[in-house]
Amino acid sequence: MNYKDFGLVNTRQMLSGALSGGYAVPGYNFNNLEQLQAIIQACIETRSPVILQVSAGARKYVGVEILTRMVQGAIKNFAPPVALHLDHGATFEICRDCIDMGFSSVMIDASDKPFDENVELSQRVAEYAHKHDVSVEAELGALAGIEDDKIGHENHYTNPHDVKRFVELTGVDSLAVSIGTSHGVYKMRNPDGKLRFDILHEIADNLPDFPLVLHGASSVPETIVAEINKYGGEIKDAHGIPADQLIKAHRMNICKINVDSDARLAFTAGVRKILSEQPGAFDPRVYLSAARDMMKEMYIDKNINVMGAADVY
Ligand code: G3H
Ligand code: 13P
Ligand code: ZN
Image (cartoon, rainbow, N blue to C red; front, side, top):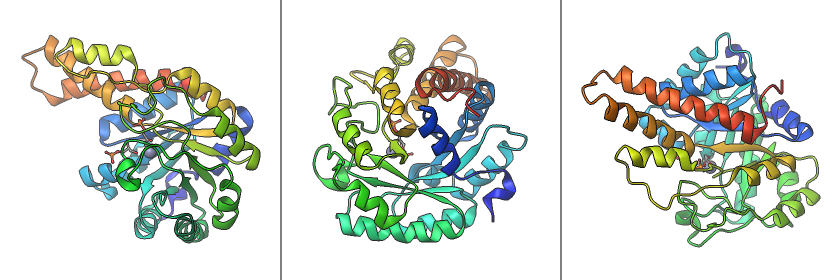
């Protein structure tokens, strides 16, 4: 199945536009219909390109075929450029299957492996992907948080001395780097929300004009957390990466910024509020609409005020 038949694009042109334009293309994870609709509507309204991301958790929850078909249906008559991307693909096989299924971009995440193994696996994926004109993201270094399990220690920043050799050996199209972000809403290893711009500078010097990717970049907006807690939630001590840090990053070589957790928070806030205000509601379309509206508002704000991706195509 060729992704081009469904109006999808790979990420190469998107990311080179972001590199020269000093903004970031949003990489938004989605796990259900309402989230996909919220992303699509926000990107149409802001005229923003978008990379729709499918994680292992999303594949387990919904199934990759359903997610793929949902996207193919949802982007009919969609004007902004859109890529369908595998997030944190762990093996060659999952990357190959997603490419065969109609994805336009994949991430091979072998960042938990020794350098040479990471190179070998990333190169193998790039070779297969490029035969299908699919773009490939790889990762060097490891984020704190969920990736702790894989590497067994705290934030392992990307070594700027490795990046050029890695990209030359693998032929990948973009590179995720570790400069202080982490997945989830408790970015505890980075309590001041400050990124390591010294490392990013060095990476960019060694790898000029090459698109870099920032994972774990949710901001955990205080207003959304407050809304959850106001309506019975108990989310304490959550914090993310402040918007000013993300803006500074995409004015450098960060061309794609991944966000998942902020949408989970917005979804939860929407559901909690409506069910609290309408305790008699039992039609899921009522509370899922509220969740969709809250996520859409968050994505619109993100596209305009964080990514700088509105009106760029
Ligand atoms: O990178 C992590 C994403 O937030 C996906 O997480 O596998 O729980 O969907 P998930
Ligand atoms: P957050 O958990 O900060 O939203 O990061 C998501 C991500 O990096 C998906 O790959
Ligand atoms: Zn990630």
